[in-house]
Length: 195
Image 1 (cartoon, rainbow, N blue to C red):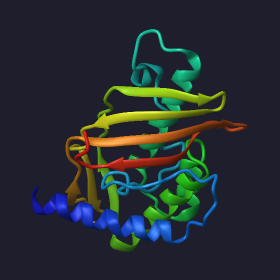
Image 2: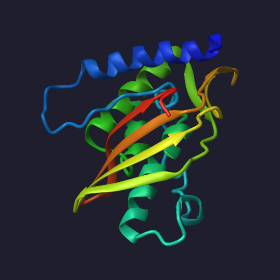
Image 3: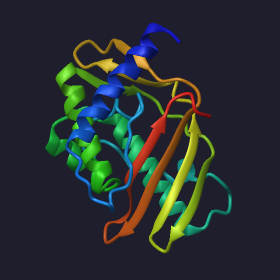
C-alpha cells in the first residue's frame, strides 16, 4: 500500500489506543474499534447533516420497517460521522447523539478530539455497499457491510489538502440498539483489507 494509506492506519491505531484508554470493564459495553476511515470522523450539527433519505437508505425493495430503521440509524451514524467539521465535544455529541450512544458515542468523541489535535477533518464521500441486518433480540441488531472506503478521506482542516484516504475491502460491523431514542449505534468495528 502507499505511504498515504499507511499514515491512516498508523493514525487509526493511535486514535484507537487513545479512545480505549478511557473505557472501563463494563461487561455490557460492546466492542468498538476505529478504522482509518471511521477514525477520520468528527462533528457536524444535525441541521448541517440531513438524515439519509429513504431512497438512499433502502438496500432492498421490500425491506421490513424495523430493518429499514436499523439501516437508517447505521447510515445516519456514518454519514454524520463523515461530515463532521466542528470537532468540539459539544458539537460531536449534538451531531452524533441521534445515531450513537454509549461506547460508540464516547469512541467518536475521543477520535474527534484526536483529529482536532492533529488539525484533521473527515472528507470525501461514502459509497455504501450491500448491508446485512441480523436481529439478535427485539431491540438489538447487528449490521454488517463490506465497503470500499477509497472515497473517504482525511483532510487538513486549514488547507483542505488530502492527508490520507481509505481503501477497498473495509469490513464494518455495527451493533444497533433500540431505546427511547430509537435505533442507535452502540458499538462498531471497522477493519481495512478484511473483505
